[in-house]
Image (cartoon, rainbow, N blue to C red; front, side, top):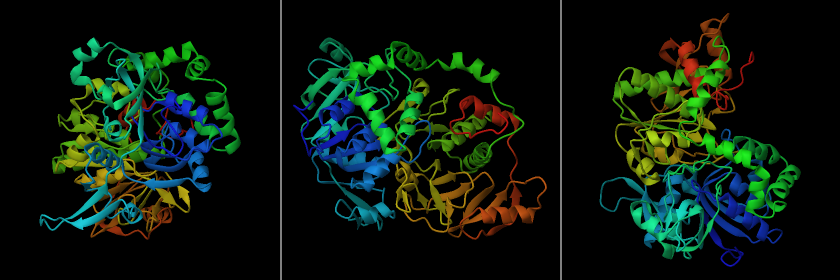
Length: 556
């Protein structure tokens, strides 16, 4: 590893094909040395957390920095690293991909619709600027400086001994990082194949060998993340492993103990796999089968909690999905982009109900899964089980760069905070780092309209967000567990409310007002939200049997 990686290097780390095995080895080889790496990646989850917690990163450039599984949340490990002096540069997901694409093409800058009007525009003064369209459209256009890292690190399905590499699915950022990097890529793969195999599968090859510095066969090299292999080599994300690390990361002492146990003491990646154990790996392999839901569904149905009660999250999802269905029908939308978490379940429930009415709308995920059909028992937005159901698989440029830009597209997103103008904050508040934009800024800048879903909370529904991750011009509605707000004349007004037993309409409105950070304005005609039906609850619980996003039922 040290043959290719040196202190103060600028490293690109692939996100959808993250090589946990390679990053753990970097931790081992640079232990205690403060190499001051600069890292650029789309999303920083636990694979980057261990580098940050090991004091290896001087600067992190990313669109997302937080926990992913079992649900999106801020990372204490990143916050501690930032408090200790780690620099952070926030971008959106598509903007990083385009910067890498520009670097790969050796052009100095590239235009974008993203970032404009956000706090990121003000922060990124040296690498981003806004100009008038030089061709006279009268519109503004953003220009981003190209980026050329020193080296790219990624995990792939297979490669031959010469480095010709098939990354596999999903496409996400493709191989732009490898192409942009001055010294190419270090690649770990599930298996080494012959050059004859590469020739027979030439349309699938993503990186020609001359871009690859070294290739290393590392089965399960993406663990604890999921991996989709077209030859049955898929494996599922290791949720308990992620949960264990999330718990350990809350305190410096337990985080360092975790790194010692799972990175240093195992010696190498084979030691890591030995510690995981054959049985655990084979369970993940079995769960990675796209049809594994068929074995899990009977258990899900037998153990489903009572449909007589529901959580705030379930109420919000059902209300938002109903509103989404009506909005799609009214405006004849054809593409629905689903955000992460409860936004994802909102979109899935809406698609199910639209299909029941024989209305065809294509689901889209930012990583490039288009026209897919969500499978039961797995609520995660990027679940590999849905890949075989796609109508098309594209990359981030094709998904949120092109298809979301289609005039008949709508998006549903969750958010850290939203204000009465529809501005979204998922990046920073009160000195605390949240998670960042991810693809949200890109999506809101392109979708015809965006709906935001969240649980009612005064700390999240604020008068004015302290950080604008996504400007609110195209945010049309905010749906919560208690209310539905819709934008009129530039600000949100209360359109619907959830009746509550024993409370009058005025008492309910007062309660909503107390749980909202701005003084609510009532629509001319107030409507009542209906509670979830048993069929809606049943479907949600089939999608999310472990209740990762549905909240805790008191009577469970």
